[in-house]
Image (cartoon, helix red, strand yellow):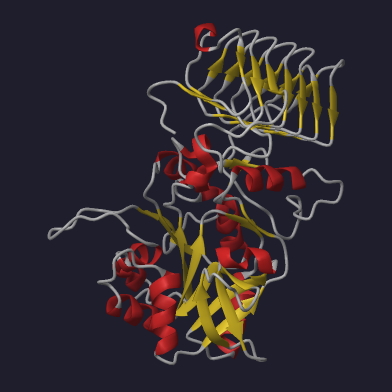
Length: 424
């Protein structure tokens, strides 16, 4: 019989709707990050660096690109005969067929998969956070406390605490109270959505709470174990951790990578971040171009000027084009004589010549004022922007656009232009 001490279950089914047009056609964990990476690379690399060689990835929303990226797990050394990586989409059963309705429901529907490995412990991870963590150290902590569940937690500013599950602990870090998104938080120790469970305790609580609608760890499973008197501990984490759930936090986290001494270092020898890479030629920087404080991916040709930006792979930046404070994802083409400031440009975009992005004063976005903020211009994937167009701040564009889609060759700040067939 197969026996694994600890297996990981990676929740990667979320839509990530606060990323707006970036996730209209792709699951949030498959969104590009830091040039050549995708968000899911970080928890997967943490697993293999921590000695966890069995990972179930639970997918649901728009899984194609995620499945293609993960494949059989070769870049993370997870192509194993026993264990390795397995993609677990919802499937049809003889009695009923149902989507994953909550984080814990997704795990409950895969009890059979977990039982195959007869684990002592199950590590639950989220597929949309940027961080480096040694899960083995957390497991040692879990064992030393003889805990039933250990929750990774980190201090957050008290004014942000109400967005998280909040833990109240005693002096030994044993959890005495757990509050899911409290209106008036009494602590600033926030759950990171990373849990180690004893397999027996997890299975028992999943089965006991299975009838709850939208079965969730924070709302159902943890309170159930807690009320039963289970030993619950907080594992405090004090390194870099970023939830890139909004466009601004996603932009911010990318920009932090290009600091002279970045808080989050992609290049540490002892804790590598692995990804699936295409075979591409090296970067080409022309003799008249300028690149300052930027990441430039492989296969990218720079003929213009790039400042404080994260540029992905297989991109062309035309002559006399200036790119500032922007994120440009893979396989994108930018024409000559463009001026691009504080833009997030998704994959497979074509931008014509003489295009200006991020011009004028800020205005509140007309369709999604909470998503498209902070002066960022967002362009969805497979978009074409024609020549001689000027686009304002907090705007969003998507689709195969032509000159006729713009009034007087411009799109004002705060405007949304999504051509039919392109969902928000």
